[in-house]
Image (cartoon, rainbow, N blue to C red; front, side, top):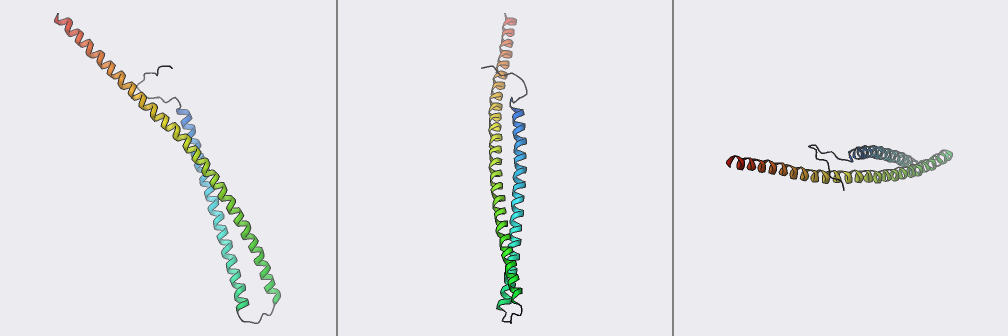
Length: 160
């Protein structure tokens, strides 16, 4: 095992890797934010389509329950077929939303992995910094001891 360099400034040997991990984490955060935004948009689209569907069902129900004489049954059948189309749109949008939610969760897992990788290096850096500080403290104590012992030796020489 090689002896660490004795410099006054702490240099982390994996600093470039740590910078890369920080960049990767930021990229994963951006991807997650994008996936989350996409999920929110798909959810809003689904809510809009469901609201439209509910309104159309209510219109059809009011026509049928209105107690009025239905003059054109073909018109009611057209509304019913339109509602079937809207129902298919709702089902398709639900599928799209579920896919967006799955992508969001996958991206969340990737973000967690990136954060964990960065945290490992952060912990390693702090441990190495602590050991470097201890080494510097020992070196400083050695220097102070050398200065003190050389002063004592000079005093003894002069005293003789």
